Structure formats: structure tokens, C-alpha cells
Length: 309
Ligand code: CP
Ligand code: NVA
Image 1 (cartoon, rainbow, N blue to C red):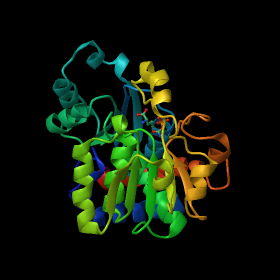
Image 2 (spheres, rainbow, N blue to C red):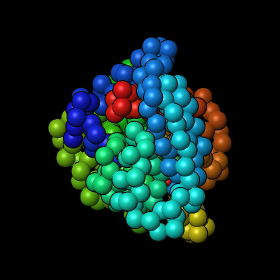
Image 3 (cartoon, protein in one colour):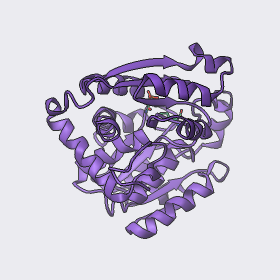
Image 4 (cartoon, protein in one colour):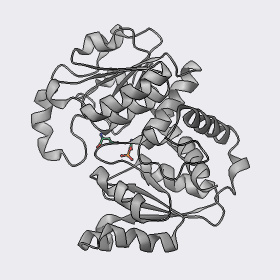
């Protein structure tokens, strides 16, 4: 774990101490409320944004964010680069380190971002791997803090696949002193090692990390109800099978009724209405999904200023 000053890369939420996370979110709020103060924070900095998977929010929020900070974003597609033809990652990142000041990458295996961080000399930001999506969770925690005025003690229930979102939410929630309940069918439970990692952090912060299988029980008394797609990017062929496996794990009005009256609904997006969530919930009064999506921009600007400013 690193303090704000020591932060070199952002590969998982566990890069941050609880205090660094609090500082980062405070900076995000300041940037959100007075963006012009930071308009030259990344002056002359070049930030490569490399995508090996599709993206709407991550691509736009980083590209706009770098531009609003006075830097120069360079959007790249893995398929168009020599890595797509087998150039070793270690060569690619050493070359990129000579041209740009930071690399944000969205890719498959998490070991890819570890390799880039090990061989490059520039900050690496994880814009989603199969295992983690920490940038999304910065925005989620900012949204929770804005809604309730605090994160500590809040109960976040995630119903769905034990995937990258579930993993980053567990660590981010643990750092925040929150109770995070991950509710998934047994075969789709989160990675036990990451559960353990989050539980160790939660012990220090007064948080709690629980893995459950009963959605109604999980939603009971929750402040935040969260879900994500049942089939993530790269799992398209499993979509039909997963739809069956996740029967009973949809966030619907009944699930929201188990939660607190003041509870909010969050979804990292993109969403499949009628699958992991009903249209009445995601388009309903408790849903703050577009504030959440907007917060990607502010939270990531804070991250960029911290790493490069
Ligand atoms: N939530 C998220 O990362 O969205 P994109 O896949 O559109 O970037
Ligand atoms: N779990 C999803 C998140 C998308 C933002 C995926 O990996 O496709």
C-alpha cells in the first residue's frame, strides 16, 4: 500500500492506503467543483490510452480528463500495435516509456499490467483487467461519499458475478471501512485470495467483507445495491449458460425493497436491462448511474494529477 506521494502505479485498489484513498477522493471533489484551477496540471504531459477491449466511459473519461488537465491523450488500439503481432510487452513498454509520461491500459490477464509496471519507467494505470477495475471503484466510492457524506459504516451489496468489479469493490470497500457483501452463485464466487486480501484490510479499518449466495438476505438493510453484467468482456460465448446460472440473481424491485429506503442503485455500465437488472430499477428514482459515470472523469483526473502533476 502506498501514500499519495509514494503512488507510482494504479493497478489495483490495494495500491492505496485508506488515507491515500481519502485524499484522492477529496482531490477529486475539488477538481469537480473548480476544474479551471487544474487546467494546466498536466501541461506538456503525454498519456497513452491503450485498449485491447471495447470501452465507452473509460476511453472518453480519460481522453477528456487528460485534455481538461492540459495534457495530450494518445488513444491506441492493441490490435493496431505490434503487441498484436507478438512484440514482447517488456520491449513495448520500454519504448513507450521513451515517448509518453504514463500509460492507461485496458486488457485481459492481470499479469499484463504487472509486467508493464515491472519493465517500464512510467506510471501504469489499470483501466480494467479480467481481475480488477480500480478506476471504476474510485468513481463508485466518490458517488457513495457524495450521497451519504461518508463511506465508513455503509453497507454495499453487490449481486452478480464474482468478477473484476466484485474484486475491486471488495478492496475499495474494505479501505473505506464499509461492509461489502458479494452475493453470487457458488460457481461464480469471487477469487478467494482477493476476498482474503480485502478481509485483511477490513480488519484494520473496521470494515467487513462477506461472500453470500442469497440475494434477499444480502440486500437486507443495504445502503448501496450494485450489479454488473453476468458475462464480462471476453466471456461472450458463455452468455447463454451464464444467464441460466444467474437466475434469481437479478436486481429487481423486490431486491431494492429489502434495502434501506434511502439506498442507491449503482452499475458500472454497460448494463443489460432485463438480465442483471430490471428497467424499473436502473431507470428508477434510486438509480444514480449517470452521476456515477460522470464521476469517472473527476476521480481519474485526481488520479492523473497525483501520478503526474
Ligand atoms: N464502466 C466502464 O468501464 O465502462 P466502459 O466499458 O464503457 O469503459
Ligand atoms: N465486468 C465487466 C465490466 C465492464 C466495465 C467487464 O469486464 O466486461
